[in-house]
Length: 119
Image (tube, rainbow, N blue to C red; front, side, top):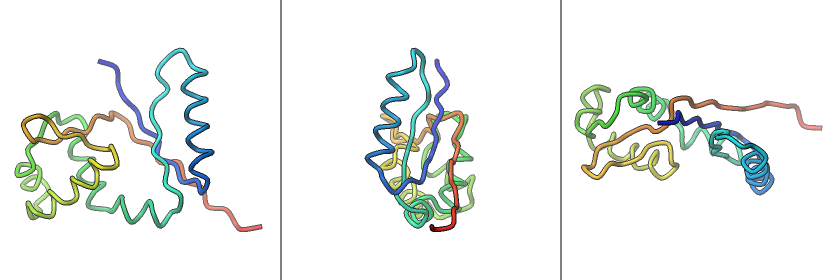
């Protein structure tokens, strides 16, 4: 099974980010990884909170983990973990299995963020 990688970017022009990702995919003969873009740092930080990052970290390489087991591992409320998992599934960072468990499909997640002074 090929290892999957994800690069998270923050670029205001999401159309340009999508075009660049598509060009990179078509230009390469081999898998180049996947991209998830946020238009602003605020959008990034509102969706990928510290607790959601902890979930991703706990699930990377762990295989399928039921929500209750994940909540136990993270020492968090099941309902809150379920809600956070829903956001991460919606973003494509986690996948639900047929049995209702959670899997992180990415072996490597890289955040590409630049802070630059306005002109």
